[in-house]
Length: 175
Image (cartoon, rainbow, N blue to C red; front, top):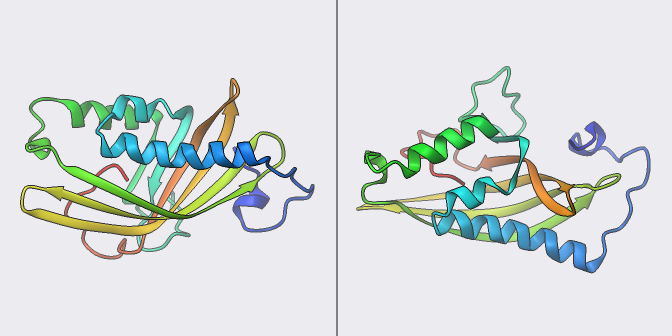
């Protein structure tokens, strides 16, 4: 979705237009809303924030890893995301009894507009995960590639770069 030059950290060939204050606020609110949907276990609504071609992934060992070359922790397209949501909501899912609770803390939201109706949003997040006696913290940075569909911002790609992605992970919630 986003141009290669923006994703690789190089300046795009054409200067992107500046976002209006309302656009900036709408984008930030989308990131906060996504986290709230996960924390409230409203997974069907969470899934609707993504485009049909969306990718959700968590690299292994470094944020720059190539999922085709290094085994990612998670690398899912929209269909696989839908299957994960169905498993999480199934009444017999033992990993959901009792249901885990999460709390997302989001800071340093930065929006980089691209040419046209696309942008890259980076943020730092700390996710607390609690299930029974288990409590895990997931610190890291998040990258959302957004595009407009029918006047609404939608998530085309979400990349979660965990600071602890080089350690064994006991549980992997939606992050």
